Length: 428
Ligand code: CMC
Image (tube, rainbow, N blue to C red):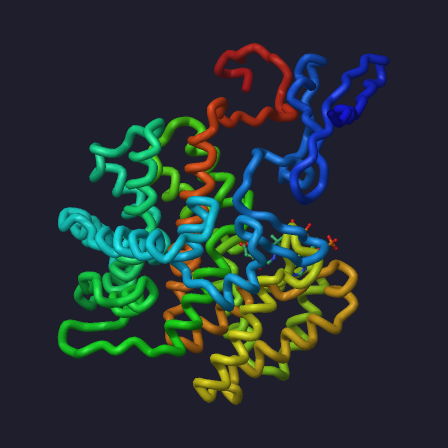
């Protein structure tokens, strides 16, 4: 048997603690610090630069090498050869499905795509100009009120049916959020369509006309969904896990993930990147805008990543898709896309970005593709949320299935007032 490797910590007063060094199947070793509190001290790592918060078997990232695997399969292979629902099965169950398993899984998801009629009434409580992400947080959270029959989170069958409902219904709710914003009637899902076709149908069809999904749109969106499906312990996934650790129901947990995803440093970056391009407005303004970034006036949205210090492998695939889509839709000469490509070129050759290892991330290209496909800008992050639902639910399910999971409860470095007495009114 291999000898347990140990890290020894010595405090300045001479006290020592030996801590096991744990190895994963891939990636850096981690020091198990759980016994540190015996010394009466904690670690301090507010933005989790050096902290692994859980064990997981779902997704692996090597940020220096620019690698991303779902259950061991490289993202490039999945993006080229798989489908989004197959990837959902893989993330949730750990293995790719057989033909029979895939057919059954697709059928199950398809049969859950409608939402309760009562749920549709939630929408009218929102202002028409509400951001669709605000609607998503509210309406997906409201699903908690509809499935009392399956909220026993300790029961794997209940967790399974909740996963199916979430994968199936989140696109329906997302499309309804778009329809509500535009004032158009909601479209019920259609079982004859694939998952992605159905989403586009619910987004863009009207009862007045026949809808034929555009294969370019379908393929590009399928890729966007696959590339965004999971990304290990990012901010929204960690939020879902933390919410789940208290025993909250899965619908409430996913709503908390959607809320976290909305921020411009996370999933909101695709929308922010497009808005930035519109603000720049013209290629001639790229150097001036980049100078503002270097002067730290603002960040270049869609660039940089906490983990990737190399090209984000999702961005490489998305970049290819981006060029394909622009070519197929004959949009290469579109002013906005020309500007995006000029910005990409400038940033990739500028020492500020090279030294800091700031590459375009997936959201830079997905924003451009979504715009080219005619998706409204305020739906960009919603689309990310639709895709990431499977990652959130798979990670939540993994945690809930662990025998000894405990409520997540970080500690703090307190820097407030020391104890003081309540002063009388005239003495404040
Ligand atoms: N533009 C300009 N400078 C940047 C950028 C950027 N986008 N990102 C990082 N930097 C600089 C930062 O100012 C710092 O410089 P210095 O060393 O001089 O202080 C250095 O690079 C290190 O950055 P950091 O802020 O310590 O990096 P972080 O790991 O805390 O932040 C990030 C990662 C993604 C939040 C950040 O890069 C960012 O805000 N990017 C723009 C938003 C974005 O595109 N987010 C989507 C991420 S991918 C999709 C997803 O997974 O959600």
